Image (cartoon, rainbow, N blue to C red; front, side, top):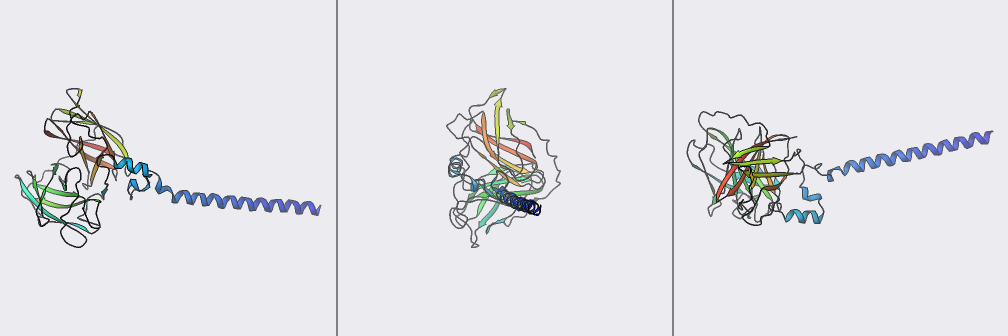
Length: 309
């Protein structure tokens, strides 16, 4: 009888040891899974999507128009990684064309004069009022000393944010996209316009622009834009900035910037009606989208509010 009790006690001890080992393995697996979660799509919001992509995936993305660079930050600062957007202009006049002058200095404090081409331009400059009206997309000119001049159309009174998007050709930031911004005040009686409600389509110059897709904040998501006129699909889109359409977005409330990269390749003067974009909008809420496309040598701009969950 004593032997039987000893045998039973030994079996119970082994079972308890096995259970403890199994629990340890389970906890280790959970910790490992948690540490690897950043490699899941959309789980590492602070890193570039290409960082965890396989070589073949990275190469495929690099072959798409606009996918060789990813913007750094949301553009709400005038400084990033040692690069700074500098301007003496704190106010601009209302109701007339005006020039905004600025320089970009590097980590050494000197004006940067070497910029790489990005969608056929060395500098993309944007202006948007705090209520996300008055959108302007300009390609400024640079003097030999690194001073840029952006010729702005008439500005309505209010607070404006001005963005400079560029890629250094050399130095620590070589090959990296930067978006820096500063604010200016346009004196006068500023009447704030309400943001149009989210919609899936809008009209511009007789064209109907429809957006399909439901992007989630911080996650890469495909977005499709379709263009029609008089109820018929448009197939005569002309190349504009090395693509068939340029898509920019600004976030309601803080005017955070995002450039939605085109993934439809240009094959001639016969683009459309459907265009694909790589959308990666960092925060939820309403985003005001501005789509620019060209037909018959004329540039059209369509605006639409997109809700991001």
